[in-house]
Image 1 (cartoon, rainbow, N blue to C red):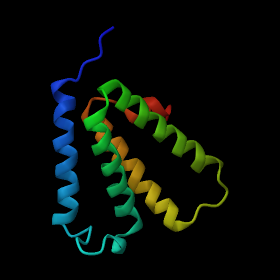
Image 2 (tube, helix red, strand yellow):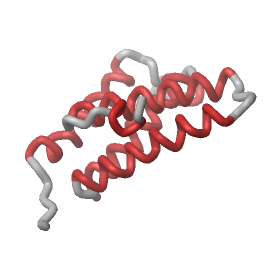
Image 3 (tube, rainbow, N blue to C red):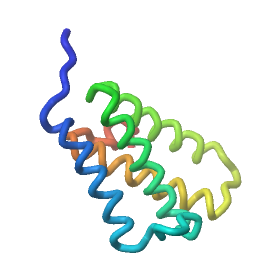
Length: 116
């Protein structure tokens, strides 16, 4: 079986970059001090950066598997933890919501992979 990069997936890099740019444009990420971001925006920003790098280096199927597994892993961890700080909860909410959002752009149902 030959794995190829689909046109849809190749455009994903530019979509992700535009989403990062919109965080700056909306001033949710202060250009001069990213440390001032809310925990949720930090999670969103980190998810986008992670996926941007991978969208340039991996094939579509590998990308889907990697981020579907991350979603499963985070969900499992959150379900097992008896205490997660509000900061971490907000960060993980931003991170996982953005992962699911981007995966849905390439026709992957995150709920299917999470068995929700």
